[in-house]
Image (cartoon, rainbow, N blue to C red; front, side, top):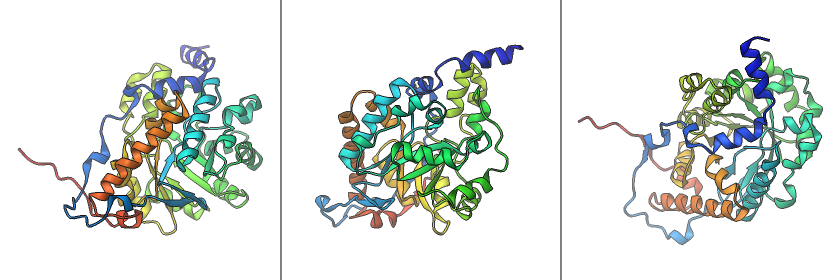
Length: 348
């Protein structure tokens, strides 16, 4: 066995999911550039509305939400993930927002791990998203495995995540991404719940979004550049940090991905990737997103309790309402009409 193969085998013996959690909590794994900070609203000094009347409610997957928020897919398949997922789901239920689970591949391959994903008992009413990699189509997964992921957690939709960069750097990565589009189209025609196509940190382009919509996918999640860098995380695991730095900001920044996908007829757009606060949420919606997805801002809270998750949601919603108040936006429809522009750097 050569040195590369030996190193890969050593990494595979470790708990990949537990390592992902530990590294995701490390601020060094974040993309340094704040792309949402490059966009600005036009302030309304006379908003002519009552703050108390601001309405952030919406619907998603046919269910009501108190705010346009999704706790994005994060984890599962390891002992510590069970408590995290339960806290995320319970917090989402308390504040009436959507929530997703991490990749369920491990639970399909090792049924004993399914308990770390099963959260419906604490989130009986909110939208709940199952999650598997699209690349699994090329690694012996078919329609039954994807149905199993949905049934496992009584999900309202299935996230098919697209992660070529992560797989390319991950020591145990699966790299055969050939012929996936017709397989996605086939499952979209057979699965009983809607499909969400989601990147994991490199963004979706208009061209890719158009292909996915034509294949029967109804919801597009940008997961663009600006948040957690899975290139950095996987490179850290593989001890190839220089590779992670090289590709840390590879892809389409989230604001740009949102704008591209919002132009596609019939697309429901989730803006995620570097959404860190309620002002970012407001910007994501003004740029064209229907919902905003966040993961990193909830992870630390979820290691503590469901109440901490609920408190984090409260803070986000309050920040969102302040932005709406200063824009004179009574509801999300009016927010989406707010003027937002890319900042022009001042010259010294």
